[in-house]
Amino acid sequence: MKNECRISENIRTRETGRQTDPRTGGFKKTLQLLPVTVTEKKEAIKVLADTYDVKMLCGLMDMPRSSYYYVSDRRDDMEIRNSIEHACLKHTRYGHRRIKSVLGIGGIHIGKERVRLLMKDMGLQVRRRRRKIRTTVNIGCAPYPNLLKNLDIAYPDHVWCGDISYIGLADGSTAYLAILMDIYTRVIRGWSLRRDLTELLVHEALTKALQTGHVPLIHHSDQGSQYKANSYDSRLLELDVKISMAGKGRAWEDPFAESVIGHLKDEEVWLKEYADFRDAYTNQCYFLDVFYNYERIHSSLGYMTPSEFESQYWSQREQNS
Image (cartoon, rainbow, N blue to C red; front, side, top):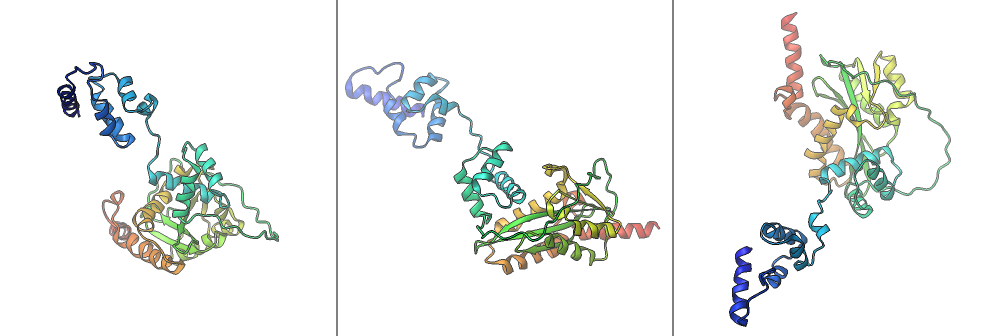
């Protein structure tokens, strides 16, 4: 850039026979023509800032100094998508304007149009339905304490964790996924995919998990209404399962479920476009029942698959007994 500016100055001096302004070096036109984008202008100013005054360079570039010094607060797209998903899961009837406000409260400041486009891309648009008369009232149980604080999870089925997520479909509809994972082995014990976000979603995941013959000592989840439903909690208590819940709005207190959902999105959902519900269901069957449990290695498990790690545990226990 400096060489080009000097060349421009020399050409102008030879052509006019006049010495150029020592402050600008005669490269105003060169500076205005070379950069095309704001980023390129900022890069050019950064290169020349050691030699020339920044204020002067900004003037030649037709760029406000505030723009040059501004550091973008734009978050990673994946982080924003995850935040939008959590907000939509908590506020199932919110449109993009309200979701924007929720994100702002959490420190993510992006425009409502970007939120709308991301929600559309993720299949999280709110469907407008005619008002229905409410015939039943489901009063959920009071939140349970977080039993995982300072807990050393030491064996299979010590703690199961549950979570719910969205999956956008190409036909414009949304599917809802509930999973139950054994924290110690990382084995997905059960899962369910439905078109509606009701307590039946978590009931089906629990039923599938119990059909494997396993029962947890502790069931951990967030404070979602599905997990606080009387019918669901009653099933757990009848099995002598202790119920544990993360604090309200504290997703980090359910990190294992958050992690498996994150892997599902990164390695499956966001890499494909599901034509419809059946297509999504078929792909989840393979990813959760086959790939995740029997093929995907985990660094936290010594680079073994969940199935291999669990088999090793029971084999070693049998040898030691």
